Image (cartoon, rainbow, N blue to C red):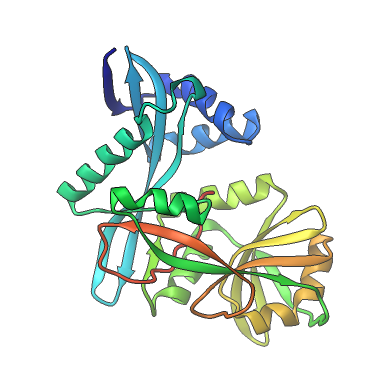
Length: 275
């Protein structure tokens, strides 16, 4: 048996789609759209057994920004192995390849563990849990009105960078923001500028049944609660679940936002991560 790790080529996309469809819950249309929109801007590492691709992991460009400057980073996403090739350590080999390269280049790697148990499994690769969300459920009581408009990716990114630049945070390229907006729209979501009491805010959210999922906003919890009734009315939902950074919110269920490799920063705000 011979194994090798290499970077995926465009001709490999059908097998990447097959691994993705086998291992995750996304529909085929979404998977094809992801590669159509993103393949040229990302790196996909694949492990081949006897020249056949059996395992993969995606690396997306980002940066960790704080008062001392900016450090290149890569988001580790959608690592998967065909079921019949599991228990051979193939994903671990891909992750070690990525961490070895990050050590050489000085890049940061970060990922979103799905559960605390999975977070512990990344300890052996020196990924350390770094930041948390509080997932807050809001049952609308207030209905303060607001005006809104659709944001472009560039507008959203400018507002986002201005909102979070006072603390360590993950900065994304405009191409990534474009995809996040398109992905949000794929699930019937909207990316809005919210004008509230002469202040400009942003929100990225989508309806899931009768629940509005707020992936990101610069509004604090009090502001979000005040407009919750009007927001639910706009999205035709009955309640809100919002991912709020734990440094600004002490309500809700605390969940891991990111685990980080090769960074000296602490509690770096990491959102617009694909999960």
